[in-house]
Amino acid sequence: MVIDFSDIGAFFPWFLGAFLQWCLGIALVILVVTVVGWVLSAIRYGPVTATSRCFSTLRNGASDLVFLSPRRVGALAGLAIKESLRRWVLVAGGIFGLMILFAGWFLDPGSPNPAYLYLNFVLTSTSYLMLILVWLLSAMSLPVDFSNHTIQTLVTKPVRSSEIVLGRILGFTAVSTVLLVLMGVVSYFFVIRGLAHTHELPPLEKMQDVAGALPGQPPAKSGKTSTVQDHFHTVAVEPSGAIELQTAHGHTHRIETLEKDGNVTYKLGGAEGWLQARVPVYGQLRFLDRLGRPTPRGVNVGWEWDYKSFIQGGSSAAAIWTMDGITPERFPEGLLVEMDLSVFRSYKGQIERGIPGSLTLRNPKTKLYLELPVFEAKEYRMTRLHVPRRLETPEGKMVDLFRDLTDDGALEIQLRCEEPNQYFGVARNSLYLRARDASFVLNFAKGYLGIWMQMVLVITLGVFFSTFLSAPVALVSTLGVIIGGFAHQFLADLAAKKTYGGGPFESIYRILTQDNMTVELGPGLIVSVVKALDVVAAELMKVLAGVLPDFSRFDFTDYVANGFDIPGTLIAKYLCRTAAFVLPVFVAAYFCLKGRETAK
Image 1 (tube, rainbow, N blue to C red):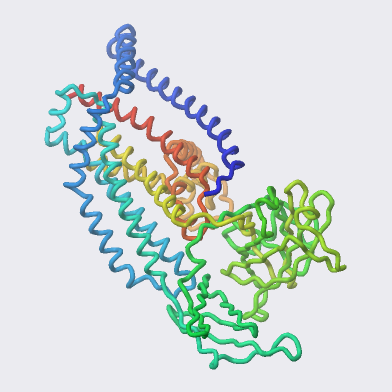
Image 2: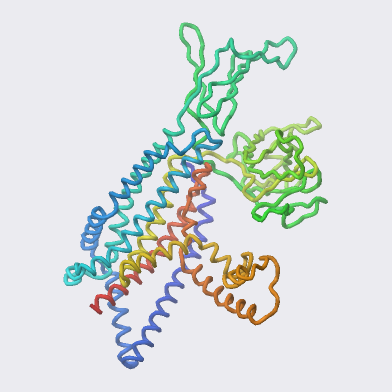
């Protein structure tokens, strides 16, 4: 395993700043809760009694939260595990087994990208199933104990309320973790089995002759493999006997050479290129307009989704990436450039052909540049170019990639569309350098670690709501927070007024009056009231976006399914965020349960 120490160095400043901000937030929450509690108690009992009560509550709370007994917590966690096994865990495992058993009927291995289909299915289905399981387990645990009066058995024993809450969280987390690991192992072998296949090579005598590149050279042979999973591979045999297999559906196969009784035969091995974990190196993106002038964005071709900007073909428009860390130690075999470009055609042209494009490598300091050969880009298809370390200029001069075209590891890569009135759509991650390939198995495990972090968040929320709400209300409250967490970005966009149609009240008004979303509303009393309500709603959305955990950020499915390595620093960052959310919610759950016990 290769560790990128530059990423680790960038993580620690973030961690220190986030930790200090988290400590400040916790201190402010404690201060606000204490002040509010003191005011309410002062109204009822007077300031002196209120001060004594607040001091006693903080002192007892600190003692209960700090002096936990691992033995009692472990025993309570064991009870939570037994409770889980009696209720929903075995049911969830059975449902998952049925899903895997019959999934092969609906997943098509002959699709253009079956690896994405299989990986997306196992990760998404596991995530939904586990979140539903822990939602039901955690939100119904304590309310059922209260309704059955079994909680009185615990509170009458020398057990702290903090230990009851922590025992529930750890118990549910433990049993869910074991089930998640089992699901991950089954899912991995399900993906491997679903994608496993090979092809039969055609006999050499049945292949077609292809004229040699030089006069008098023996002809090469060309043919097609057998069709398996709705695809085949084109195979070419050089006069020297070397055999080459072309890529199809995003993968190729190992070519095994067999020799028996002096006869050499070839056999194809398993599929390669589907299950991978690419480590990309991204750059900073900027644009040039059609006249070659710097511009913040490319052309808008009318797509509502403006994630990508477009550059016009047959002009000076270009997208330029500035890369750092381009060294021979990091790229000993040269550069492997991979591009995922959107192709927008203003006219059909030769639709079976791709759109020609070109890349130019340039030294940011000396401005020395070198144009690479023209390539063809097609929609929904990755374009790969290999740049060797030694390059030849049009004048016949040899240049060194790292010595001549980079400046202290910095390199500019300029992309142009060569066909007039056609367009390339790009974003920052549309072009990257493939530094290396990490372990797919480890990356697959990282994807399930993201599901585990979501589970822990839901368990903590469910236990928190169950400390002071009845079972149905706790279920609804927990579900509301989960839905709000998955809609976190939408709430943030509403608060920042980045959505079409205005805020929620303005959107409802436009629906009722059938007004266009992009047209400004006219003056009037109703419009003024609607906009005033949206100001209040925006502040509420801002608070919700700041409090709710962003569940979608913990979803690493796209990384794994698209074959990209999940950075270790990203995992560490979200583990810290999980802990930063769990700890204050655990403290709040303790005080809620403590107050409920006192009331009982």
